[in-house]
Image 1 (cartoon, rainbow, N blue to C red):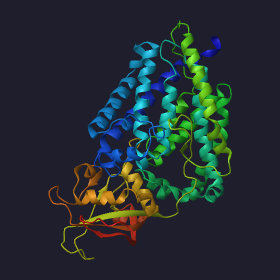
Image 2: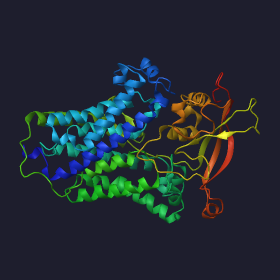
Image 3: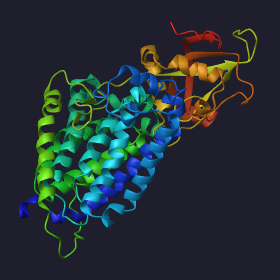
Image 4: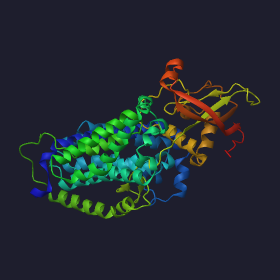
Length: 474
């Protein structure tokens, strides 16, 4: 069928596939390096305990059938290897059916991880990677031109990502309508980047322009994705520029990068297709059309949610995460709080004891420590610590276990941190946690002190706790 394929998007597909494989690689690397402490057999939220109470049909995963830390590591590193091979273009050197199977492997493995990841994997970009990764199975390789219907479905995802995020902002916090949210957001976002301090100190009129431009990009520009070229390319290019601005201003895991990957699939790039392309196999056409019908049917609930006045963010409506709803920062915090964890080896913990602070890799701690760029790599514990500071309820399932691991000087847990103040063979006797308010310093304060943060003690978060009978927070 001539109408079935779009050879003019040959190069766009190539860029999309290689970039998506790169995102997959980062996701699997994040899982391989962090899972033992987070959800391993001795993790804070162990997978074996989770699969005992959740059925396979609720959370399909190979780990429902068998779990061990070694097996998880094999799956995660296999995902890294396959993703690396796809990034190098292996799918272009095998038959069409084999290339599809290659793309199915990382999707199935990552689905297995996300579905047992619990709160550590409760982020919108997990479902987004799975939704995009599933479509990547059907986008084809060098044996066929890109299918029109798959390219359309990729734009449909991009539309829902951007338009859904725009709607949740307009329906949520009034500061988005008043154009004032960025007076606070660069300071209070989950994990600031190395340039976030400078973004925060932009003049207020510049912040108004940022918010207004965001509204245009998320509420108006997505509609242009479904217009003829070159308008659709211009719309996708504007989205890419906006996402790169967000990459510079903070650490949002691979959310911005996978949105860029999606936008790349809508670009009309210079053609680099072979002069002759074999006819599209009938089985492939039937399969792609069947998948399109399935995804169209599954879009009902996400669309209904998107147009609802009670719109919710980042939710999956099916256990395979095939079609989801997205959105971010429907509300913006005005004040930044951080939980600071400290330990002491004194026999009796007192206020004047030798309390030493644990340093995290990404979240603010030492006021003089300048934030680093980690995205697209995802520091899962650091992100959850931001939520824990918003409310102890967000940390009820894992914070006590974190404290216990620190009291044991657990090697895997300490690897998640930037620095432990205690030797590996001498764990602390007591751990406590305190809540601080953080704010960016001014230009004058930065010059005088060299500190990018100023912090003020608020209250006790966790009283001094011993390993025997770890106390829960009040």
